[in-house]
Length: 121
View 1 (tube, helix red, strand yellow):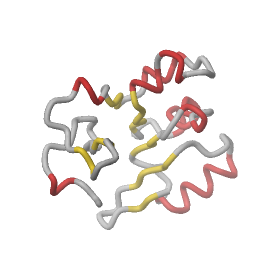
View 2: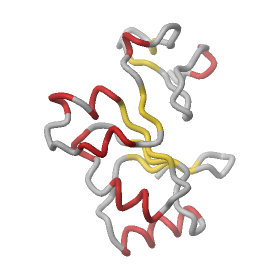
View 3: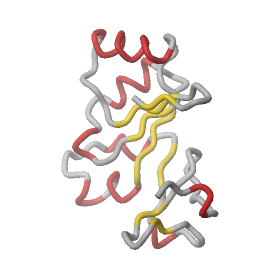
View 4: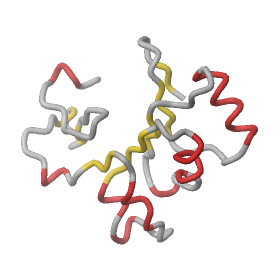
């Protein structure tokens, strides 16, 4: 769980669904749950629906390329229904490339970052 200086919270990948995990999360978020759930890849998405129901204000973030097609080897069709679905890199004009890795930078609302000031290197 990442806690920003402004108090915003981002949970990275999904912990095991249940009350013990929820108590730990709520001890860090003040009870309301995280603002965002950032799922890095399909292997770490189990239970995302549970967390969405538990924390209705939380926005789930996932990449379109992992939600559809062969990358979604677990066959979870609900991954395309997340609140913020990042687009294909090839579809995004002006997205900032981070270094020489070809990684793209995104804002938390799902839009591509448009400036170098938004990129952590």
